[in-house]
Length: 261
Length: 93
Ligand SMILES: Nc1ncnc2c1ncn2[C@@H]1O[C@H](COP(=O)(O)OP(=O)(O)OP(=O)(O)O)[C@@H](O)[C@H]1O
Ligand SMILES: [Mg+2]
Image 1 (cartoon, rainbow over the protein chains, first blue to last red):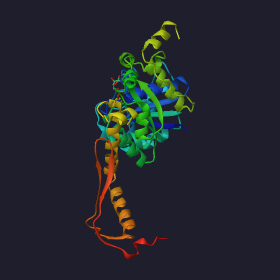
Image 2: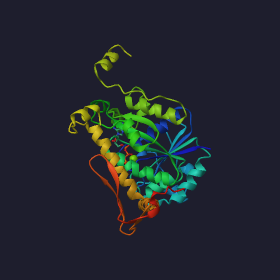
Image 3: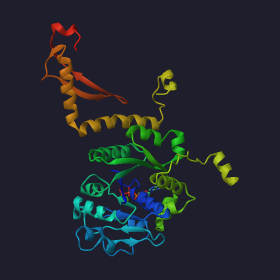
Image 4: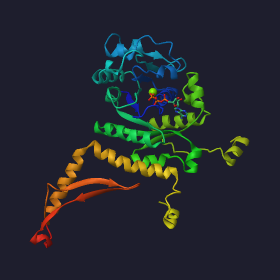
């Protein structure tokens, strides 16, 4: 029986879809059979992030409304043959899928997949309900800003009300700013939200460079964000991976580059 | 607050990270209390029960609320006392 994880945040634009794409690829690289479900109906993105936008025939809306089987709507990843995307509709809106339909779908799909990752839309309306209902546990993504952490807390309240386990990912951390005391770090966010953290992802320009090409950043294992996502995947698979301090590009970090460490 | 701040009594040079942390703590206490107004009502009833063992209080005029300054929150209760009980000094149970 597969594990179903929803990736959610409350606030928009903090990196839910980026995270879903990288975790999906990372789990597939470890040999897991993975399905990614985009529930951001009307504003779909996951197809773009995975480079699969030209292969979509049917969508989650067709599946939920029982016009086709989920198998007909799944798009296989070009490079990782055990990774699939269930895209959503770009024309319908979030009311097109009832939470109950989603739960049924996910419970059928878990017989076939090791992991199902659900990319949740921003907000706390019906789209959120639909995304969350079938999940075993939730990843809450936030960024080190007061407004994003506040929205995350609201989502956490909603998730706890329906008894979902929650793990935190803090995205877009700028190590230099943290060092200078001008940005919240993982420990202080942890302290405020009192949740276990499974990832701290640095702010990394390569994320945009990779997504321009339809490549989830985890495929670039020499990037800071790629390495951080790889650690998250390990933790999801139950490995005990300690959090490493970020390398700030100070004198010693540069020295290490020079001497090829 | 760091030892430095305590010694020099300054909050101007708190780091913005520290300020963000403190503001969040305050705002989340309010957010969480507002999400479940029942909780405040339960607290109020529990306080009434405890105080009534010792004093005769005006339950209807009683108020409790969360109040805060820049970086801390207090639960403030205003409880009008009508009378003190004779047996208040006798330890209960
Ligand atoms: N670690 C990072 N470093 C740099 N840029 C990032 C990082 N994570 C995400 N981004 C960028 O932030 C933007 C928003 O990311 P993404 O679309 O994944 O967020 P989202 O939470 O899914 O947004 P929405 O709420 O609209 O669905 C994108 O441009 C993405 O490239
Ligand atoms: Mg998204």
